[in-house]
Amino acid sequence: MNSATRAAGISAVIALTLAAVWLFWPPALGGGTTYVTTHGISMEPRFHTGDLAILRPDRSYSVGDVVGYQSDSLDTVVMHRIVALDGDRFVIQGDNNTWLDEDKPTSDEILGKLFIRVPQGGKALAALRSPGPLVIVGIAALTVIGAARAPRGRDTRPSRRDARSSRRRTSHRSRGFSMPIRARARQVALVSGAVALLAAVAGGVLLAIPSTQTDSRTLTVTQQGQFSYSGAAQTGTTYPNGVISTGDPVYTKLTDGLTVSFQDTFSGSGVESLIGTAWLELSVATPDGWTAALGRGPTGVLQDGVVSASASIDPDTATAFLDQHFAEIGGGGGGATLVVTPTVAVTGTIDGQAFTADPLAGLTFSIDGTALRVAGDAGSALVPTAQTDVVIDEVGPRSFPVLSISIPIDLARMVAGAVLAVALVGLAAGAWIGRTRHGDPADDFLVRHAARILPVSAFTPGDTVVDVSDAESLNRVAERLDGLLLHHDGPDGQTLAVRDSDTTYRYVFPDGMSQRPKPPLRAISPVTHHTTPLVRIA
Image 1 (cartoon, rainbow, N blue to C red):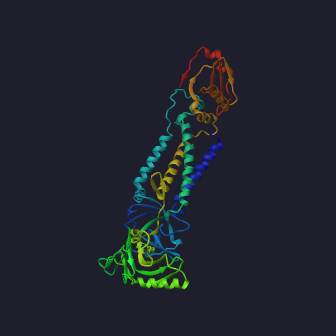
Image 2 (image 1 turned 90 degrees about the horizontal axis):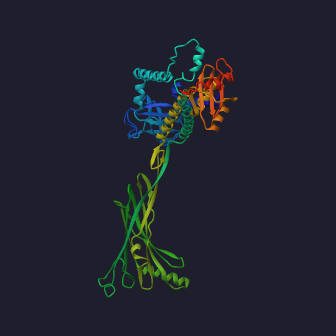
Image 3 (image 1 turned 90 degrees about the vertical axis):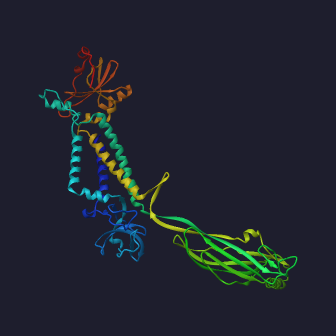
């Protein structure tokens, strides 16, 4: 790891650590995050005694937000939900309370809005404040640090006359971790840094998003109308019983009057507090657009979700209006209608949302020279229906759909925080394990190319030895030959070699302490080493 990469990694760790500290720093130390341990049942079923609520200040607060404030009447911090606004003050109430809080804080008096809820986290926080758990955590931390720093092996060589040489031979092993482990640790640190950055960005976005959302749902209030009519008629072939019933044509010459009845029934899940009235209005109309009112019937009052009304029709009066109109315009009759229109003035609530009932279609009779007949399909005309759609807006905790489940924003924030914490730990641990000694190019090279390094205690070079100018050039040779980099840690420094038939390519790192130059070619000449062609793999 070069100095630029190391500086960038350290800067990222510091930035992420400062962001986490800023996010969770308490007000007692100059921060803005408030920790509240809940007591009682005022916020059940969401909160129970012993839960931990983490509050963060927001730029604005609205109805539906769970907030905390210092109550003057109770002399403690209270965390309840905003249910209404009273000028520049907030009306607060516990979710499980039937009464409003006595205090009405302003936005400046609110400590913050609910950020994260940790079930039973208050009890855990209280336990950690006691001396016993703190001592246990401290001992565990020291044990882990000591185990991580302890070397995996010990130099058992009997000769200690040349301490500097011994330190050079064991410099890369004294860290307690092998080269592959340290190389893997660097990869873990890199991945952890990327994950930490993503988690920090995600956490920032989640913090910027409001904790509540307005969801709309549509409920339907159904009206079922029912028309009927009846009247007395002259007994004869047309009306054997002297009675006109619903569905019969009404011959105007044989009857003196007709009564139209109407009944409207309201239904729907959650429909309550229905009040209202209804009446029937009568009118005649002609194809040329002329209409005339014939009056209205008495008003009926809604009871038990049903309202009834009726009106009397005088066919002779309707016919006289039409004849007078046609006489005035000089035209003939044909296509005239008599319309019975129900006027329903009903209000109520559905799931607490107020509504006003929509109008129903009227009953239309066609008028010819002799009779009144129900226009259109009598089956549907006599049974009109209407649906009143009521849109209900509900403010609740924000959630995010993921596959087939919905994740609350509090849980998403907690997951982002947990991922950030774990990633920072992985970044710190990976950077510490994979670190190199300052100014030791050999150690840095060995860690970066650990997958191609093969440690050996000795090797026999080929007939030709080629000293390359730098270690990276030797690594390119190994890649070109698809071979391993043989590594020998000896008194003259760190030696790397690549074998290709009878040619040996090598590079010797100068001793980091003495900057001793690499040994001359005769030190690994073929004559010397061919007599003992021994290769031992460490």
